[in-house]
Image 1: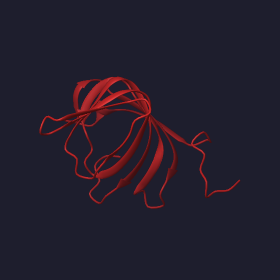
Image 2 (image 1 turned 90 degrees about the vertical axis):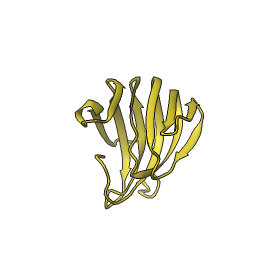
Image 3 (image 1 turned 30 degrees about the vertical axis):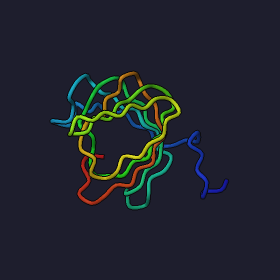
Image 4 (image 1 turned 180 degrees about the horizontal axis):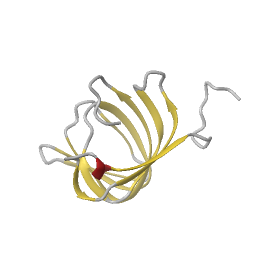
Length: 124
């Protein structure tokens, strides 16, 4: 098996967390996140995987660049200035380091993602 090519369907680290466990993060609902992470960089600054969230809204993490492709569901990114962008199945987008605002999962959503974390990272 070629370790330079990582198949997201292959066995990987899985995790489940409730964002309610991170004080001050949840805006509405009870977000539960399931993640399959087939790759983490050697120093933890780069991850790639698949993530699923229940409907809810929370303060976005602002310490990373994140590229996403929505596999299923519907999300909205709501910036501090009130502007809203919606994404559904098949949509791809990049959230740049420093984005301030909220993630809102309108319908249970699954995405493929790649993140580049920066120093002073918040809870990962």
